[in-house]
Amino acid sequence: MRLYLTVFALLVAVHCEELFNVDQVLRIQAESENYTEVLKELEKNVDWGLDFWTHGFSTERPVDFRVPNTSLCAVKDFLRENNITFTVMINNVQELLDKERAEMVSNAEIKHKTKSFNFAAYNNLETIYSFMDTLVASHPNLISKVKIGSTYENRPMYVLKFSTGGEKRPAIWIDAGIHAREWVSHASAVWIADRIATDFKENRAPVPSILSKMDIFLMIVANPDGYVFSHISSRPFHRLWRKSRCVTSNPNCPGVDLNRNWDAEFSGPGGSDDPCREDYRGPSAQSEIEVKNIADFITSHGNFKSFMTLHSYSQLLMYPYAYSGTNAPDQPELHDVATQANKALYSWHSTIYKVGSIFHTIEQASGASVDWAYQRGIKYSFAFELRDTGKYGFLLPADQIVSTARETWLALKYIMQYVCDR
Ligand SMILES: [Zn+2]
Image 1 (cartoon, rainbow, N blue to C red):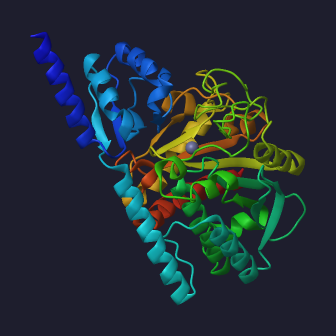
Image 2 (spheres, rainbow, N blue to C red; image 1 turned 30 degrees about the vertical axis):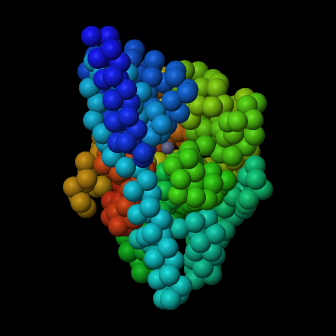
Image 3 (cartoon, helix red, strand yellow; image 1 turned 180 degrees about the horizontal axis):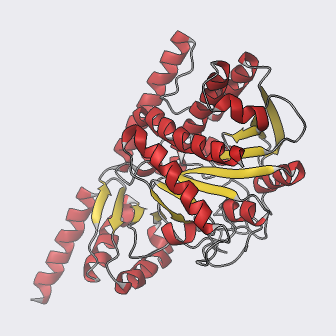
């Protein structure tokens, strides 16, 4: 019997190796507290090299994580041994990466031939920065490019300022891409920048009236170093990079999670002190130059009324707090604004979003940008998690960019108008 089992184990091992020569993304819907305990064990095993695509474990929402092909057999065995039900969310990560890469190559060729910018494509930093220059050049009376500092790797950090004049008018902040791999957020921000300019030029409500009273600051790439790294190769390790690219106390694990580094309950629960973790918060609050540049810019401006940040994926529209389950003082109003914005978003393609505080909708997170903004008196602070809900995760096909941007724009427009009316 013993021999039989050994032979069986060997067969399984061989079988596994044949099956799993690619990374997969697994999804677990935690059904009980027992699941949470097992997931914590799973997370602790650094040797498996798991890459969590969602953060925080609760019975409320699924946990998605990429498993390198070398660990797939062991991880699946571990889950089965512990009676944990899982589904394969993405069967072959490399296949999606190859598709995305091929699309980018053909889009670059089209761009080269037609000499026009393709909004339905993922573009690298250089292309996005040159798009910004073109946009500024075509709308010199409305848009200017503001350099707010440089990154760890010395790349410039730019914000597009939409303004019809006046000094330090009440302003709206929108950023995207603080997490490098969330490419649809950058791509949506590009489309939105163009849309603000066009709506103003063609006198389409409510943009001209908003811009007659307020300025809009839009940062398309909040983490340029991470974004460049995510374009270097189509290997999962690069494309799925989340953090910045600074050196840390562990030479093998560079990068800080820039959305855990803000001076808002920094180092509380929901952020890690381990540089090898995806949610590594950094050594101290605002230790990271990228975060410091944005925080300094917003603080010295001193008249921001709304702060919105675009992430992906999960289809969520959220407000503070992230660090605590206690309701923010303005919770009823923020919930109402988010609910109305969500209705506007839904009206375009019937995409379903969930609305709530970050803590209750996604997870506890300390050092998050929306909490920082809210605690500094920027009342209308919201975080978006754009498409999808997990079919493709961070590898959303480029043909969904424009529809994602369009529906997001309706929500942003609702919030901007609401803020402007007050
Ligand atoms: Zn994110």
